[in-house]
Length: 321
Image (tube, rainbow, N blue to C red; front, side):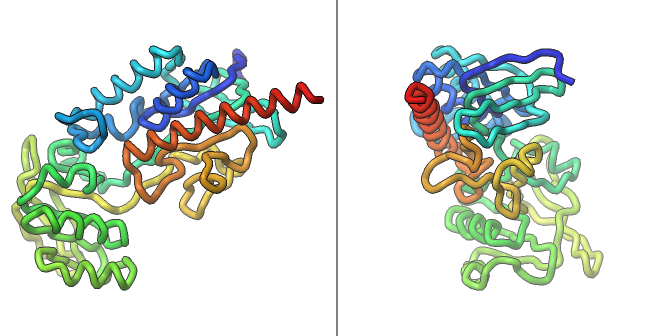
């Protein structure tokens, strides 16, 4: 049972580029947004050491520092940023209805509009050596971090279209790319398979998986296990990219919001509107194609504008009634 109830005009669930951008625009529109940061304040960028491709940072910036900047800007316009996580939701199906969100199991927020920016979590191999070297050469985003390994030897794990896309991207800038595929075939589309197999500096190792990531503070190599023969080999690399998918953080919205088969929230047309009036989704929670900080920020802006227009329309309808 909730011990307290609070009414707000605009509630933002999750932080990161989408959440903070939504907060900036919502605050400037006088929606008095309240943000709950979620279990990972700042989102996935807090696990990234260098961000070199976000406009406005010509010298680059580390991910956590960038998120501090985003938060300061949101707070400058009056956003109420709070630590906490949504644990249950009850969305109204009525136009102008009030949505209920439970925070940390003991506080109920009643919101006239909700912007969901809970993001997605990259899947990792969960090896101790891999986790220890995240930010030290282990990455889940080749497009984000590949530039730092220009002219070097790297490896990538995965056999689907995303892995193929990232492997061929890396092959354009790296000396060699070793692609580890757990099965004896690629799950990628035929067109992607042809691209992979015809890339001269891309080495595909089938029936292969990571046994150990080598290195103390940075990645220095990889021990690979052939899961058919049991034979192990070591290769020298400086970067390891994991491309085995992402899981959208949408479990608490199941049964209330429309999702695709993998759990990403569906939005209507070119808007950020969900199937519930007054509920909007932005960032990686609804985008499995691009997954970049700048695109997340763009949809955060869209969500705030959509929320502002929705609330204005609700007021006009009530005035007419």
